[in-house]
Each structure stands twice: as structure tokens, then as C-alpha cells.
Image (cartoon, each protein chain N blue to C red):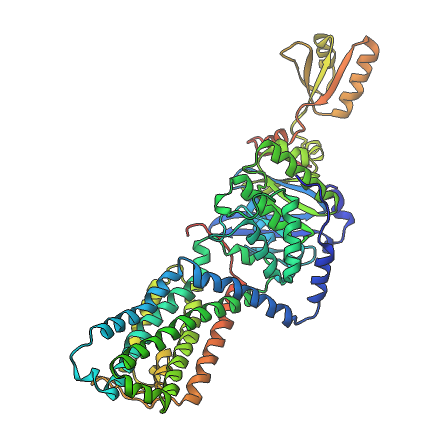
Length: 294
Length: 325
């Protein structure tokens, strides 16, 4: 056993001096960054990340297969038809299903996963405001899902359009509005991660088994087209759909509603997210750790 | 310094204070109506499993919230982690670690979240690792550690930021005898530096050896607090037992039985001494002096036989119970 008795008083005193101000924003920022760094590593490299990669790679695998064995259908030779096919794949498969469940997996595990692993106390025993912890963890989940699903979105687009109609696609992307459209899809993907991320973060905080509420939410988002205009607005997908650069044909059963303009839908999503994060912060402030029964 | 003696002299902002604190887990009692003032030094929480030791520690560190009452640690409420954990280090019993982390990672992670710069993190981490003698294993994965090594690395993590209060839940569990002695020495060293050490244990002789004061818990209630000998003196219902080593134990037993305060006198198995139970120790010692002077008895030793923690605890929780004045 070492008999060294030096204590890091000097360093602690320095640290305490830094936090004496009533609103230590710089300390909070450093702590948020520290949490973000640690959590990003977990979100990208842990075993849990495998499901995220699996979900995100499904459309790439599917479209890769179609690129290798092109179907003998007219839509796959017509650029404008392919553009609508991509819009349908993006809306139905990527946005509503894979991104939805990818966000559910990542964000619900931010806290729930730590409770299951019995490791949340490491954060709770640090001199960090629990609200800072919420923000740091949320940003880490957002970074992971936004990066992974943006790659999926762009990759799917490239695989579908460039493989089947290379000449038109090149013109469209490099001389036409294609690049802007691709960036819009990526923007929708990021916004979806912002909105769904906040929802699933709080679901993971409130529910011991968050699978059921996730499925209920999934159903709610899917039947959005059947809902009356007022209820449509109580969903994330409504705001995202109204931003889509290529509209997809409405279902014959759809209840039609005016799309919400971007200048309303984008800030609305951010306000909604901020409110959810505040609620999560209030909840976690009172949270107790009892791993019994997990 | 004892809990009670020091409490009167120290301001609440310099103590760990429990004011009528209760914690219920639904219908189940965790701790009930706890009133404590804990001063610097080593204070041990003693009691069997389920007596409320870990609940008290989790309440102090904000991992649990009291159902009723208030508590503060050196003037800080446990629901203010941003202030509390600059003063407090907690070596919990949770035996889980982030996957793939090395011992060094674990401490660095903790200090990074504190908001320290990278250079400070490295410096403080190394100092903590040195202090618990984990240099050789610090860069190995915690998953491969023995129980004793995990215990040490948790201890290193809890002292790394230089806390004033160190809360240690069964810190000696899993350590071999040599390591136990070393860790106890470290605790003593930290206490001598002026730290508050709150240690839970159910190994009574170790607690007896290292503690400045004890808090005895049973079924969620504090049954006694103070230094062990003080607590024993206050148990008025249980006669004090004293072992006297002498050359004529039968004679001494007969003489002592003449005294009103003697409850029992029993010859030791080796017939080289006797156990005496008395309700009034002061009167007993006066009588013993008188008998020795009158008879010329050769006394080898006189020592209390039941003021160790184990005996005190047994008295306090036995069905007939001990009454603390």
C-alpha cells in the first residue's frame, strides 16, 4: 500500500473556484461535452449499437440487391418515377419504421439501458446537474442516430437513382435541384431524430418496459393519415411529411389536411423537443436509483 | 472524535445531519425517524443485512430521497449533486462496471464528468491509483479483476477528487487479511487528515478496531450511537461483565458475592480467574480495591469482558433488550 498522502486539494480548490458563479455555463458546457464524448463512444461502439447498424443497413442491403439484380419494371427505367419510388421508400421504410425503431432503441436505452446494466449511479454520483446529464445523453443519441440514418438516407438515394438512371441522376444532382433535395431528405432525417429522440428519451425514463409504449406510438404515427386534421398535429410524422421534397400519393382512405409550412413545422419540432427535455430534466432530478427487480 | 461529543461543538454546516429522516419503499421500512449528527473521523454503521445501513448511505448521496425529514451533508442537500459530489465520494456496493472499461478508464471517466481538464484528470487518476496500490492492474479491464481489486478501484474512484466526506459501503468485502489491514490503515490516515468517513460493516471486530464512533442499526432504527465503550456504559439493563485474572478466584468470588451490586460471579474455565457481573461498575471497582488491600490477592488483570461491539450489539437487539439512558 502506498503511503503517499498528497491530496489533490490544489486542483479541487481551483475547480471549486470555477463553479462559484451562480450560472456556471462554461462548466455545464464542459460537462455536457464530456458526457457527450463518453456516450458517443458507447452509442457507436457498444454491442447495443449493433441493432442500430442492422436497422440502418436494411434499406442499403435491399437497394443494393436491386442494384445487382435490377427488376424488369418500367419505374426502374424512368427517373421521375424512381424519384417517387425513393420518396415512398424513404417515407414508409426509412422514416416511419427503421429510423423510428432505431431512435427508440438508442434513446430509450440512454437511461433505461444504464439501469439494466446497473451503471447509472456512476453518473448520479458525479457533481453534475442531472439536467446536464439529460442534455449530454440526448445529444449523444442524436449524434449517433442522425449520422447513421443520414448515411442510410443518402446511400439509399445514390443506390436507387444512380444505379438505374445514371445519366439523368448525374444531371439532376450536379446541374439540377437534386443536391438540394438530398439535403432536404437528410434534414428531415435529422429532424426526425430530434423529435423521436426526445419522445423516446422520456419514454425510457418513465416506463420500466418501454416496448409497449413504443409500439403504441408506432401505431399512432402510422394511422396519422386517417386522423382528423387537429389530431394529425399531435404527432412527429405530420411535421416531417410536410417537409418532404417529393410528395407521395395519398392513400384513398386518407383524411386530407393542409401540410404545415416549414417555418412552422421546424420550430414546432424544436419547441416540442425542448419541452420534452425540460420534463425529462424535472423527472430525473427526482429519480432514485434502485436496481432491485431490474 | 465521537458522534455525540463532537456534535455539540460543531456547527450543522460542518456535519452530516439527519433530522427525523424516514425512508419507506412502498410499504416496506428502510429507515425510520433517524436523527443523527455525524462529526469528522471514522463513523461506522453497524447492523445485519436489512438493518438500513445502505439506505442511510444512499440517502446521504441522493441516490434515494427521504420519505420524510431532512438531511444535509456539510450544509448541502443531497438533491444538489453538483455541489454535493465536490465534497463527497461514495464507494457503493454496486458491483457493476461499464463494459470494457479499465480501472484507469473508470476513474478518468468520473473525473472527466467532474469537469476537470485532461491534465488534471490524468494527475488525479494516477494519485488515486497510487493510493490504493493498483498501479499494476490499473490498465487492465475491470471485468478481469478479483473482487478485492474491484473494491480497491471503486475506493480509488471515490477518493480521486479529494472529497471531504467519504462514504464506504462494506469497503472491506472481498479483501484478503493483508489488504484489509492496509485499507484500514488508509482509512485511519484519511480520518487523521480531517475527513469524514462513514463506513458500513457487519464485521464487528474490524469496526471496533477502526471506528471513532458507531451507529448501531436494527430493522431500520438507530438503536444506539456514540463510541463503543460509551454506548456500553449506557446500557443500564445489562449488568457489566468483568474478567479478573487472579491467584485465588474462589476466594474473590465469595467476597464479591457479599456486595449488593454483584449479580453473578463465575469461575473461569482455567480456574485462573473469574467473570463478575455487576450493575454498578464504579462501586465494583471500589470494592475490588478494598478486597485486594485487605487480603493481599495477586491480581494479574481486570478488564471489561463485554464492552466490545459484538456484545453491545447483542445486548441492544436481544429480545429482553438493553435500555440506553
